[in-house]
Amino acid sequence: MFDIDLANDILTLAMDKGADFAEIFAEHNTKNSISLINGRVEKASGGIDHGMGLRLFKGERVIYIYTNDTDRENLLKMTRDAAAGCGEKCGEAVRIINADKCETPHKVIISPEKADKKPTVQKLKLADEAARRYSPLVTQTSVGCTDSVQRVFIANSEGLCKTDERTRTRVSVYAVASSDTEKQTGYFGPGALCGTEFFDSFDPEAVGTEAARSAVTMLKADNCPGGVMPVIIGNGFGGVIFHEACGHGLEAAAVSKNASVFANKMQCRIASPLITAIDDGTITNQWGSIYIDDEGEYGRKNVLIENGILKGYMVDRYNGARMGIGATGSSRRQSYRFVPTSRMTNTYIAAGESTPEEIISATEHGLYAKYMGGGSVNPATGEFNFAVNEAYIVRGGKICEPVRGATLIGKGAEVLMDIDMVGSDLKLAEGMCGASSGSIPVCVGQPTLRVKTITVGGR
Image (cartoon, rainbow, N blue to C red; front, side, top):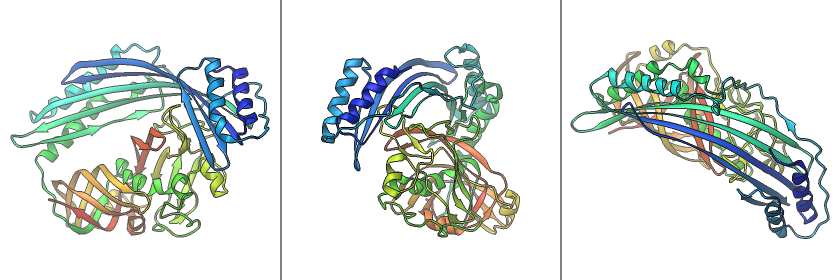
């Protein structure tokens, strides 16, 4: 994928010009997408993203430059330009002999690059038909599929040289339910770190029906009452609150700057004893998994919180050096255009001992947040405001009428301490996470759990 002799020349030149550390990240990414609107193929597109980024360290300074022109002379000129800011120093890179091809456990059976797209379109149409068939209130549907095959080459001045291939496939289903006065949307977006064989286990009718059911349910719901109350948060995508309000605060990018409420809290209690939280990039074929990160470190299972005690952070090379700790296989980026930094993979709260039924029956009055939506978070304070896409009133230990317009307002650190019941029904859900190094695939997750008091905003 990338010439070893050229990589050696680039790294040696960078070190000779004064860099303390030099790293190459080259990428060739093939992408395809298909979208249907109301059952008809609206768009089918494909493309290739190709280029290289060069990162240099000089003390705590970082110099990053990238290009999609990978001609030898251009890359050497780019290296000289980038290293010009490093100052004089005579260094020597460790010479790379061969690139190690990473034999990933995330096996691909059918590469999207070779697959016939007609069966995929048929599956998408089945999801669309199921959504529209659910109710006459469903007035619009949007169903799509994206896939990518990303091949990367990573080499640095310490002699590391690895290649990796990452194949991902994902489906998105939107259903819009309408009345005379308003509209509500239901959504489902399953995906995996695998090829077109993803569709062998994909149930289009179940996914389409669930998206439509959520939209129609919320269309008929009354407005949510506001106040401070117990909140039961459903499994799966409910984990987005931990991801946003707490997970980002456990990334070294924030911790190293003391811009996190969890900085300098190692071995301190930061959560309820019921909470164990994990970031695990090794789960086979999971959407957010990696085999190597974007610095060439192997992905791993990182225990962040154990029984309420802070045990670790997610650490990349640069911020780890600032903190005096090693990298944890947590450095990620969207593409060669972005500088890598510490990011999440599959981040979840581990299963507890209560059943979901026990949690609900133990709640006299409160809110059940079945599906979470988007929100805003201040990483420095952990303050958050999240929309709830589908919610219900809990009364007398039972889930009752649906309500809409609910928001959850609070601080991540306080919510962690206020979790008083954790279910046994752990589930992961697929999503995309945006931050300084771009948009990357991640999973969020948790079992059903209860926060004993949280502010609920309503209408």
